[in-house]
Image 1 (tube, helix red, strand yellow):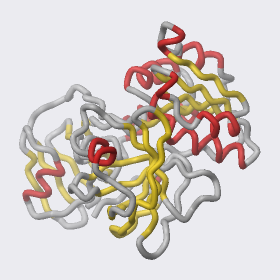
Image 2: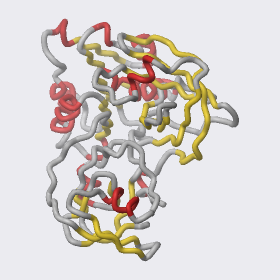
Image 3: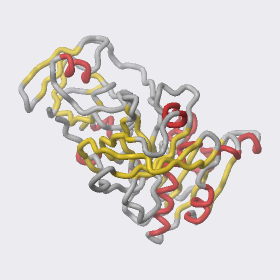
Image 4: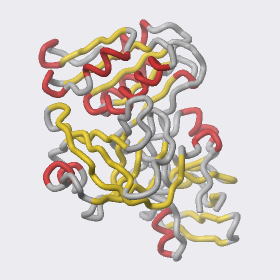
Length: 326
């Protein structure tokens, strides 16, 4: 139903596939690694930085970054931190999911790709944000490309994948908040990087905000990040508007307190979606006319300005009319 923007295409769109939990291992405090194997068939191709959409037995859909080591392509390895505010995802996986349980993997996507050019790389991880970072560091090392890694956590008990990071990184800096007495100085780290360095960051909201502020003066193609929680951006407009679907020829009203995705569903039109918080990219649609009010946590500043695509689960329209490639 949707058409992804060409520079944000999904890694692999796959039919819902049955998997089973082959094993569960302890990685750090409140952090478990789940080994997911296909119940039949094969595993879709993926690159470092990718995540999968997982439908759990309790009906909850969640997204988890892949932590596979280079060369491991016969399974999906995901790392899950137990969130005390869990709405049924991490809590269910930690407390109820056991080896042998069946789950469904609905897609593998990548909104956090490694750049292909050989420029230096600086990878910054905070807390559970290390999950895509460790796979990226190992991929760079396997390709003979040096990668500096900076990893911050609140406590030493929260540090995950230290052995893998130490083996892969050309230089590894570990910052522990309760030992240093302060949070990581992201601005100092970013400012010290050479102008041609590709910067990657995944971590909690305050870290990402500091990272994006510090990297604002750098070329956009050198700044890469991924969020695990949605950004609640202020709406530029709250009024109703009309969305036109170019391919189907239909026109639908979108009410003041309704998302485009909700309006589509109400009209009996199916559209791909997953997190419905603007952080996974599943519902991305190409924009043909009109000006979106972007409220997602994926698009960069340059992509928002270009407005070639939008996330219909959360973003709206600034004007009265929006035309989508649907």
